[in-house]
Image 1 (spheres, helix red, strand yellow):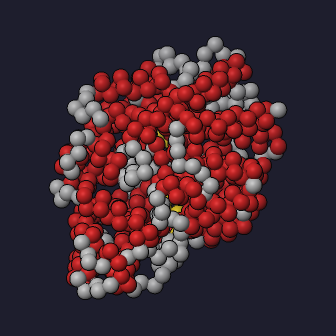
Image 2 (cartoon, helix red, strand yellow; image 1 turned 180 degrees about the horizontal axis):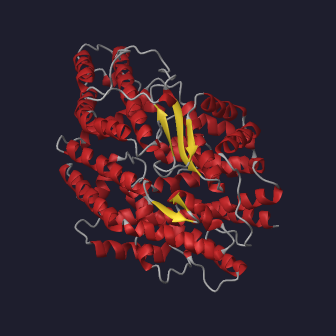
Image 3 (cartoon, helix red, strand yellow; image 1 turned 60 degrees about the vertical axis):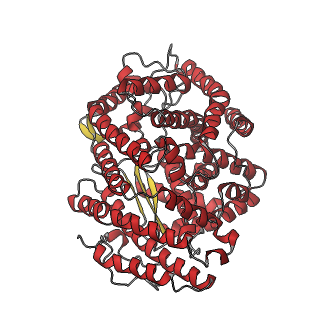
Length: 581
């Protein structure tokens, strides 16, 4: 076994609470040291005679789970920060192969013991309702034969991430990552945009066969996992395994319809205006990010230090608590924001579960979307810090659908102070770009989600069938863009969406949450102090309440039909008109 990973980045971090159950000196990369702790928990359960003792047992189990969670997070962070570091990759894969497969049956057994414990009925029902139903779901779904399949699934997902993170192109005399190439799509010179887009698209297409092969292996594994658990397809299994207790696949179909009916007409109107402003007969894929008046691209910062300092100023203007939380992250070196070769693509916030501190990872290259990404991930970080005093490990994390309300609200609330990065004219441009981006992302979310609904409800489909399903969705949600000559790029566009590979069915959450965030923003436009009070109150609940109650605490409705979507899209439309005026 490899020793526990100790990144220099985290060398000064300690557990938020002193350990009571887990030894201070344990090597959490060695199953031989971990297993006896599970043995102790299983033995102790029979000795719990009342609610207080059972609660202590749950807290000790949570302490162990948090310590292991943080160990996994540290190894994942090390691997994604340095994909070319063989030691970091080996440590991460070692945990996947030797620790996680051992954990799953032991965690299942603890859940089974809890569900059958005579003192379970003595626990406060409202307090433990969410945990109780999750434990039931865990026991219902667990199959020992799925453990090695899930390990293989994780390893394949890591292969996809390593492959896509390694891709570079030669452009303007230097080697550049694909993430960095995004900045050239905002250049007024159309020839530069086209060259940059085609280089990037063609580089991805060179890996299309490898990516398809990885996905088809993932697909086979997921279908087998669902069948082993007794489900007719992976769609039904995924909704259960993701803990979607408060909405159904049919609700997602209503969301798709709402986006088609309410957002697509507005998106096509914006695309038509863009085409006219650029003086084009047709919009091409490389025409979608440039300023429609052909102004130079927004360049909010030249270096990461400037990005961090100005973001700190935004939080200082918005809210004292947020400003203090972000300052804490800077002091504790919990930010890795710059783009570099060998760094995994994308951005994320990862909570170090035992330290109860958030870490933000991203690939900043000097674009406006980098500012929005940092605001977004900071919202997740504020969520983690708001729930930091919750000692019940399970409740320190909320469902993704509400986690993304925390982050997307922060984009909208923070953007009102975007002038920290710009003069007044460019600040208006940045706010407009952000709102237009919301209208553009809704159809993409619907496309990705509907595609996964199709994939996993059609077991045994061919690659050609999958391509046709994707193109049908592009026709439905892609808007008015001319892909002539780049049909292969269009049919393989989904290859860039890491969620399809790493986190199946994790994407519609962004759409559901965006509706919540727009409601928080609408509330703030009426009464900002009250809206922020509701925001903080909801975040502090962590995952202790069902989704509808979390939304309600934030002052929002948990609904994603046209009835909710229509007034929110109207609000965005009105705000865009005001910015134009």
